[in-house]
View 1 (tube, rainbow, N blue to C red):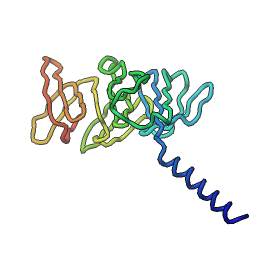
View 2 (view 1 turned 180 degrees about the vertical axis):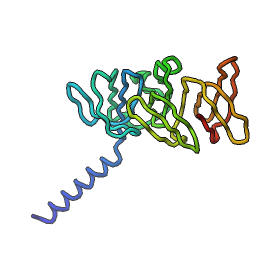
View 3 (view 1 turned 90 degrees about the horizontal axis):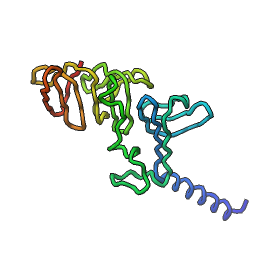
View 4 (view 1 turned 135 degrees about the vertical axis):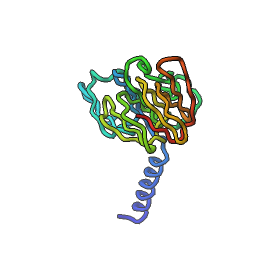
Length: 198
């Protein structure tokens, strides 16, 4: 081979790798019939199922009968902004979309900072960890810092350092924890710092 040919091929390969590395990240969204929302990448599709690489749940295979909608994000939309993009469906705008069952279906719900929504049963929040049994992903232990929002379906006990224990339905949204009493419409608001929920 000629030295110039090798140099040109080496340069072309380096250019392709650099373009691949700086290209926008692609994120697909899988909306389940149960209301769960997974963010990640569609790896494979068949007539009966979809293999999906979820940011939090890893590789999962979901039957088509369990999928309400697949939202494919073109690579050109990969750059995340808070601004509304023309032609983008409102349901895909992560900050605004919420599963229709939240607060109405008897399940606990979590929204992760990856914008994934999980439906299931909240076991506890303690020592900055969340133990959650997801409808689709089974038992998960998550860092509390990775949870953007949390909705408990039933009243539970919550304790903060240096404060009395409180009983009620819990809503965590960003940096605020709200506890709504089950007997009277009593609503208490706390900072998010280190709660214990059981």
